[in-house]
Image (cartoon, rainbow, N blue to C red; front, side):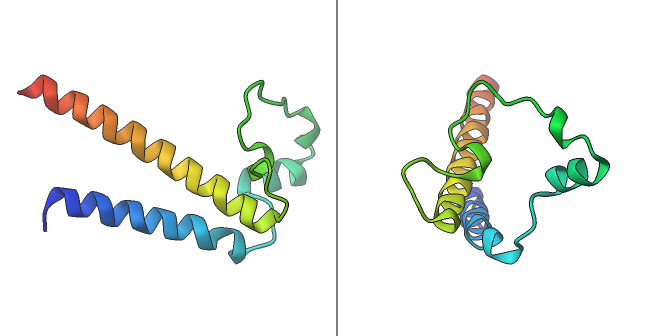
Length: 94
């Protein structure tokens, strides 16, 4: 199987997981849950730059759909960054 095909399969799996993960559990994410259990959730500082604060995507009123779209956005941003860095490294090697 070609390298490109592996990348596309990985992207597809990541997008699929981003789609179904909000449906898997109603609990908050792991870090948020531990912070709440340990009593320091109130010490959290809001990031000055938020595209999808609280895993919600602006303009989408259904919370589940908004969370899925935020997950897709995150997957695509990470994929794009890794792909771009990989291409830069490959160019320097040639």
